[in-house]
Image (tube, rainbow, N blue to C red; front, top):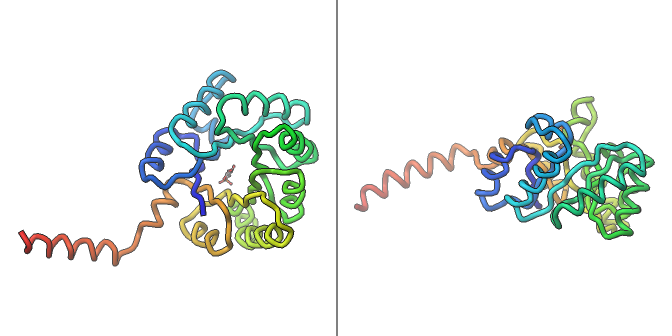
Length: 217
Ligand code: E4P
């Protein structure tokens, strides 16, 4: 399973990249705004800065909600850097735009996916990634991981190449569940990725080995 980091914070992206296990980055307008990025020129430069840190795919989301706007914006974003993946919401105009991007060899991430039906439409339009939102479904007492598992099963059954990118990951346990569900990618906050390292027996084992190593000097 690939690991993307879900942030627009350059320091966190550098920290995750330094681990040597980072496969890409996802951003969204909320994450960009949180970093105080304002104005088109700064937004575009920020995506380039992210691409210069990591070697994998970087999702940059369109702000337009209409088809023509999405196409114009997506073309501009894709031209920024070969690593850019144009992130498009799973709406009627969004699905049409994804089909256009597919036909024009531009990679896409279909975002805000909450049902298997939406995921199937995105796959049929040729999306590179489809992003089911795990945490936001859990927030409304639904089962986000069950959706990830269902999409994986449907894509496997019909042989779609679209990768299942589990998004809205809130916890380390979500990551474990995504692995078990067969997600192709999980995009996670840095804290959830680092949480995978936590085990008291590992800490205790290191402590014992360090103590015993001193006896070997
Ligand atoms: C990433 O692609 C999504 O935009 C992000 O994971 C959404 O996360 P949230 O539901 O925590 O805002």
